[in-house]
Length: 478
Image (cartoon, rainbow, N blue to C red):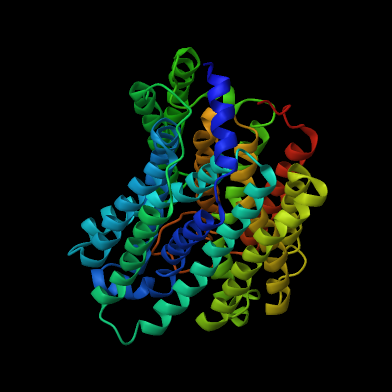
């Protein structure tokens, strides 16, 4: 029996299998993901006091987790295609649960940072979930889009629940008990996967290219490390640029190996296919705003206009309102994406989503003087962002061979993470009024720095829309 016959038979069998129950359990997993992403933000200052560190050192949490996320996703995505997406989802949840318990009980800043970084394994959850649904529905794009929208809505609901819960309990619980709650939630997500999600047949064959993994780890590690050092040492230091250039150079032998290897870790031919590369490029450009612009938004909102002439002078409570409105718009955008794509097609719906992100951030250039203007801008950008969060992995799976759904959906998260890391470093420099990103600097950033941030977010979203609009999907094959 040929491979194509096996793939076809498996697709028909899975298309007949019930999917509603599976999606329900996977939504529970995304609720846990949202809790991880929203729970800690209101209590970062309390965590700093608990660990006896400076508030500025909290920035290392984001940097460490970004590096781990970028490194592990290519390997986990490939393993998903080889050993099963459910197994990788289960494995990554076990690791995330153990890391979450480590965060709760870590006795020192060093151990806390390691546990926090390893928590970054959760970034592979959504790509693996979309791959599971894609496989179980036989690649029915309409059903995959609808399920992806529900997953992202669950994610954003978890963000809100997590943020509200930690803020409400911060005064009444000890820090260990407070930090243990996300670990409990992730452990429950592990139970949901174990009992609620069945494994789909694996269609890919082969083994992991460990040599390729070593090369891509070296390349990404150097690039991400350079970007982190750029934020710490500033653009005047040569060492960040040395690391970034060395990481870029390491991609050359990696690319040569993958193109010549019979079973590559990252199949560059698949990622470079006509229907695939615009999706991956969009994920990179989208990471600029969805991952890089949130801290600048928060600092702008907290800036006192009586001192600087700009800003909202918002309290922490008002900032939470802005963030809450943005997160709600993400959930709405994810749900509306499916409805829009039914009328226009997935690619056209993603073009609209990217344009909404662009419009939302470019509106900041003339309109940033009041809370109402800021909320309006963020809701517009949030609608587009939510649609892209749901649409990118679904579109990547739709344009992938059946044997590479895990790789393509996973790489949307890797490229998004790298885009966010680049943006985070560039934005930190743009907002550094003293010409350095020294955490001890007390001067406020200039308004022109914030205008640069918003312009970059808007322009990158426009470029993403252009890529999606001008490059047609590849013909669908069995």
